[in-house]
Image 1 (spheres, helix red, strand yellow):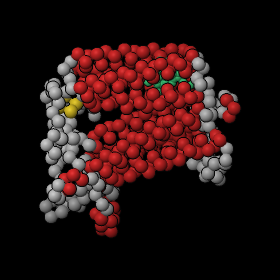
Image 2 (tube, helix red, strand yellow):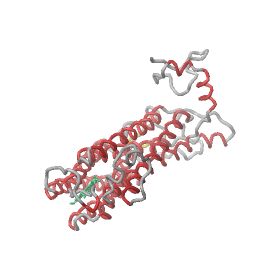
Image 3 (cartoon, rainbow, N blue to C red):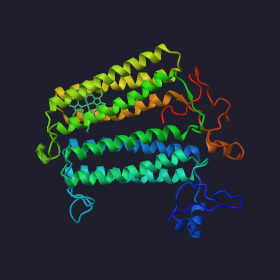
Image 4 (cartoon, rainbow, N blue to C red):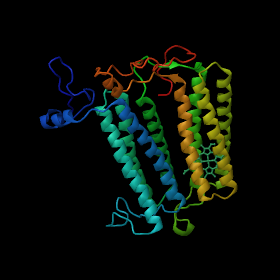
Amino acid sequence: MPGGAPPDARGRSKWPVASWVPWPAVLVRSQGLREVWDRLPTVGTRTFGRLAVISLVFESLILLSGAAVRLSGSGLGCADWPDCFKGHLTPPLRFHSLIEFGNRMVTVLLVVVVATAFLAALRRRPFRRDLVWLSGSLVVGILAEAVVGGIVVYTKLTPYWVMGHFLTTVVLLAAAVLLVHRASRDYSPGSGRLLVPRPMLLLGRGLVVLLGVVLVAGSATTGAAPDAGGAQGQDVARRIPVSLRAMAEVHATLALFLVGVALATAVALHALDVPERVRKAARVMVVVLVAQAAIGYTQYFTHLPALVVELHELGATALVIGVLQLLLAFTHHPREVATEELALAGGLAPEPAGVGGARGGARARPAVAFGGRDGSGGG
Ligand code: HEM
């Protein structure tokens, strides 16, 4: 039954959270719940920013701990879900069980962290709808991940489900990067200013798409690689019916194309009159990308030692963050003044999201602005 936050005398919603959310009427009408909600402390912009960073750290950790499970051959270390073994929620003191169980524990912590971030977004002042959506999508995403993880176990590590599991995590990682970026910046309509010529913006978006393709091919390469899912290296899971060599060739060719486009982007940005921090973001991305390609070749020619493959996974995580950082750097959004600072400065009422300049220089002007305002740079 759809509801909606009840209006006050002036017709506005009394719940700053959400006249636009279809709250079930039963919740909206419950006076007790509303009072509890109103009594919850509000969250300042800086505190919310820290929560967003913690969410990003845990999203990265889950990618790496998931890889550790696969590479140590612990995928079936807990053969059931949600119990580790039928009737036992906790693992026996065995290496593979402990590794798989550790990964599940990181997942639980991640759920707690993103749920806290979501609640904090609802209580954040100033209230920001985009942050509620982003942190909410992290909660929904991680729950979906838990379901897919269960299917991975039930289907005995079928490579297509393992791919889906990995790629969903990448999407959540990207959402966490956006959350961190937006949490401290003004994203009100018209606040963005494009710092690069529009074709560069398109190139940046192309880089993100191309990275996505390389990641899909990479995860298919893993699906074609010898399985690490069984104890003592036995092949217990089906593999994608294509040779590792063929799949690795496709993946590496796409990766080299990505390196070429990234290098061209970086060179173009250095030739153009763009702020130094945009160029720096491009340099960082190129360094991470070249290192990642080198690790990729090393692991292929050294027959996939677990540690190097884990490093490749770390590189992929860093690259997702690096490419998105570059795209986001293309558009300038002024920093939002921390509500904590406003309170210290004499209890000023929080200004609308992102009013820059309480500290004079807080709203740094970019060296050059291309194409006027543009809020669409990086999402
Ligand atoms: C430079 C951009 C690159 C990116 C972003 C990238 C990313 C990835 C990703 C995400 C995976 C799958 C990890 C998983 O499913 O757990 C992967 C696997 C793999 N990549 Fe790359 N890769 C890159 C370059 C390369 C290159 C140049 C090679 C050279 C041959 C290579 C060889 C491999 C191999 C052999 C695997 C399978 C490893 C295994 O799971 O056993 N990669 N890559």
